[in-house]
Amino acid sequence: MEYRNLGRSGLKVPVLSLGTATFGGTNEFFKRWGETDIKEATRLVDISLERGMNFFDTANVYSQGASEEILGAAIKGRRDKVLLATKASFNMSEAANDKGSSRYHLIKAAEDSLKRLGTDYIDVYFMHAFDEETPVEETLRTLDYLVTSGKVRYIGASNFTAWQLMKSLALSERNNLEKYVIYQGYYSLIGRDYEQELMPLLQDQGLGLMVWSPLGWGRLTGKIRRNDPLPEGRIKAGGLVKAPPVTDEHLYNVIDVLEQVAGETGRSVSQVAINWLLNKPTVSNIVIGARNEKQLLQNLDATGWSLSPEHVLQLDAVSEQIPIYPHWVGKR
Image (cartoon, rainbow, N blue to C red):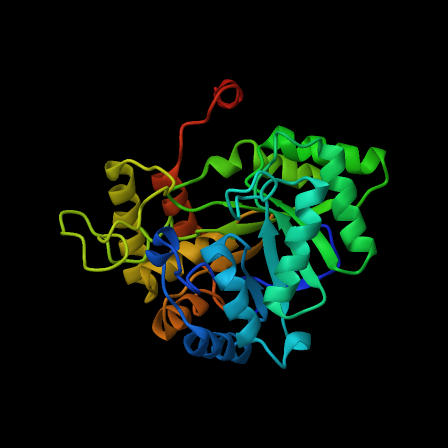
């Protein structure tokens, strides 16, 4: 397993981490993703550690805390061998203050996550989304407190726009507060928006990227093919609810080339899609999901080899997106 620095920090992390949104499945939305219980989760953690992947990503909102509880049980007795990332910001209940990035909510959310995970510190704590109703400085001062108190080691931002992230970084620098060192965002062969605004910002500011949904919300696993009916599984059962949008034609064009490259390299479609991301600038880590042991082992084999420059160019070309304004002016 290859290790890289987590963005601007000195923390070394494996290039792959295990996402645990499939743990629990205790509400209708996350049930579509998976219903992994403690026994299955423990087996997935065992395999991950055997392969050198000691980084696990969760969030308080995943199955309303059940994912954190199951992950905490799965790592019990080996906390010193793992790195944990979790997140806060989204609604945990209908209560007015049980959401967002206010001081009131974040301190409570962090304490609740610590209890569910069965630990006294979080390695990487992400703001799951930007809170437009809370002053940015209030959020940053709270995160700074969580770091200085020892409850959090590093902080990150997820799903922020470029201006929201840059404003946060500038305020941290101006007020000598803890800075975001990592950004967690969507990036895949069928979703390259990240490259236009966020990638240049992360390169300029020295942050790293932690990719979520590298297989385009399950559409680049090799199960979906042009002119074939959808196979039984999560997507056919309605698992594309809230998925990043992509046109069918673009999806199938990318899949056609992925299948060609997979055949020429002797790799699976999903392995090629993940490996393509590992070649891209700013990528520190890729969060992979797995509903079972077979899926986990297949995704783990996306590392330890590299696509040829020719194959990278083929995939770049078929997945290219039209730049948004003003980027198309520069391209022209």
